[in-house]
Amino acid sequence: MSSMVAGRFSAEDVYNNLNLGLIMLDKDFNILLWNEWMVRHSHVPAESALNSNFIALFNQQLAPGFLRALSNTISYGLPAMLSSALHRSPLPLYHVYVPNDGEAPARMVQSVVMTPIPAPDGSRSCLIQISDSSNSVKREKILLSHSEALKRQVVTDGLTGVNNRRFFDENFTLALQQSMRNDSPLSLFMIDIDFFKQYNDHYGHVAGDRVLKRVAETLKGQLKSPTDVFARYGGEEFILLVGGMDKREAKTFAEQLRESVHALEEPHDKSLVNRCMTISVGVCTRSPQEEADGRNLLATADAALYRAKLGGRNKVVATD
Ligand SMILES: Nc1nc2c(ncn2[C@@H]2O[C@H](COP(=O)(O)OP(=O)(O)OP(=O)(O)O)[C@@H](O)[C@H]2O)c(=O)[nH]1
Figure (cartoon, rainbow, N blue to C red):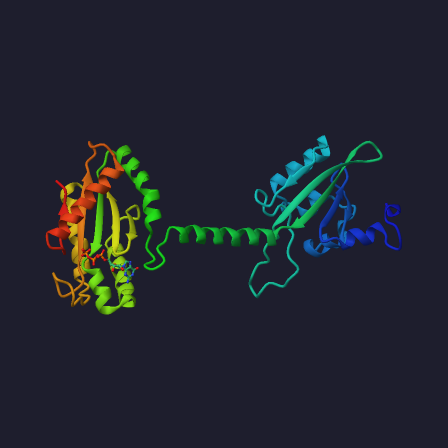
């Protein structure tokens, strides 16, 4: 073996300095090779490991998937790769650090490669390489949480923190399909702040932003189910989809939304209908018998909102 390494180093120098665990087993699972990395991470010294039986050494601590792969490699010459995604920690190996008081040392996350090697006597040995995948698993977790945060950001309105129009559009068709499948009504609420231009002009844009946030939070606070689809639809307009309410219930709920904003008593000296901030709501309910036409539902709710505005604002108009 040492003839493979030129110069002053032996093969032993090389495999003992690898940042990788190396184990060689004969056909009866006796340990022929146990490098320094294995000593450090298994806490089993080479003197105890070499020539002892690998299975007996680790007693019950080996993962069943690892044992199956090992036996296939030795019996049938099948190479194997155990990724840390499926086999997180097949061997009882640990990081070289002292855990805090009372903290049990955590098993290292590992990737394992098994290679069959023909022995001179015609039998088959197995070379096992083990690498520490803890860092790549940590990296994957960080990437996953970043990508989830990004996904969330894409569907969140930057100012108010509620869902944005994109979120609504993505969920509208799904909600329609679900209401058809469940044979249940679906109500669409279009909600618009009254005289918001005048508010901005009088109190300034920063105050306008603050009120938008307050109204968004208040409306969101009225929702009853996590399946309700609520979003800022644009500017000072919000949209809401609620399933399972008939027309009368939807109108009552729209009144509740309107009242919740009125109850904030947010001063609005330039409103022509009230001394505080108000909203108008247009609502339309698709009964289970009607065809599920999203565009039609939107247009109908929008027309109802228009009538609420024309009718004096701080009002709910529901379609019959
Ligand atoms: N502060 C602030 N203002 C916004 C934002 N988005 C839209 N607006 C303002 O909202 C106002 C909407 O004005 P209009 O569409 O005329 O509606 P309105 O004044 O509420 O009148 P009605 O809806 O008819 O009662 C505009 O002045 C926009 O500049 C925002 O993110 N922040």
